[in-house]
Amino acid sequence: RAKQMGRNNYQFYTNTLNKEKTLLFELENSLYNSLENKELFLTYQPQLNLKTNTLEGVEVLLRWQHPVLGVVSPSKFIPLAEETGLIISIGEWVLEMACEEGTRWLDLGYPPIMIAVNVSGKQFQQDNFADKVKEILIKTQFNPEYLEIEITESILMQDSEKTETIIKELSGLGVKFSLDDFGTGYSSLSYLKKFPFNFIKIDKSFVTDLVTNFQDQALVSAIITLAKGYNMKVVAEGVEVETQKKILKNFRCDLIQGWLVSEPLIREDFMDFMASYQQKTIND
Ligand code: C2E
Ligand code: MG
Ligand code: MG
Ligand code: MG
Image 1 (cartoon, rainbow, N blue to C red):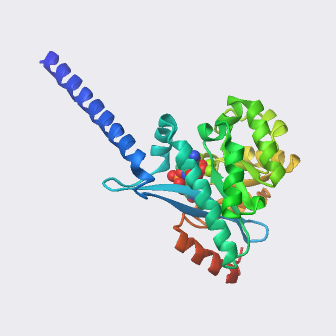
Image 2: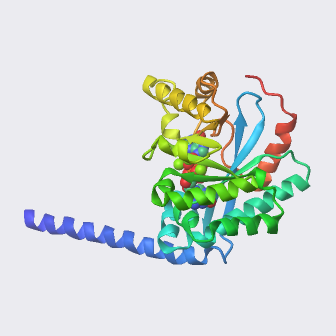
Image 3: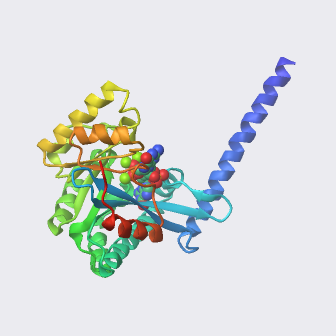
């Protein structure tokens, strides 16, 4: 009996594995067509300046409207896009759409805000990344001063000379850079010295328990002090409640992003948000 159960378990195990493999394979296949089929779309999450209570920026977050599975999270398909190389064309599309949107908002009379776009390792490390960004900026007529490129620490480890060249070249045009998910990777402090980041984003894993966890408080406060020493602005991610905001404000954190301010919004809703924000006077 034990033997039989063992076999059943094994069968169950391989069946689940096969199912997962098939699902992944199907996902990969449909990802190939997602651009053509216009299944990808952008969402926009506001970033609030804690000192002035004004809208200072927006992070562009990609979504995939899969015909069968519904909306697929980028944490599921970005790794797949990286593996297959699709990230190059997808990433380019995101960048172009974001810049196009930014220009449109300015044309419509909205006050300028920073537009932050996530760029993954493979996309950043391709030979002509800087040229591609320049082409997109020209094509979309977007002011480079308002483009912010978010990269993670893993990129800095890969080929630091190349990375430095790209950052310097685009910074020269006015493009800003932010270090995303700070604290979750290797977080070598030498990165702060070596690369001229404009923003550091504190990962939401340090914000989640901020109110009750004094160690997280110490860490977040130290990161903010450190960043100020390097003239970098700090964005706290994943701020969901007022008490977290209060603590971050006390710590002199520059910007917050999270559900407390707003979830990521589709473009129409984000434009409404911008419009209402201009009128709103916010109380602390
Ligand atoms: P990220 O860049 O660190 O983005 C922040 C994530 O936190 C987003 O998840 C956002 O929706 C989520 N978030 C924001 N506020 C809150 C909050 O208050 N509470 C909680 N629990 N979560 C919050 P999302 O949109 O699922 O994106 C996941 C990751 O996928 C991003 O992490 C980024 O690394 C990647 N990603 C998204 N769009 C793109 C893209 O266009 N290109 C590339 N290469 N990566 C992207
Ligand atoms: Mg990001
Ligand atoms: Mg992040
Ligand atoms: Mg993250």
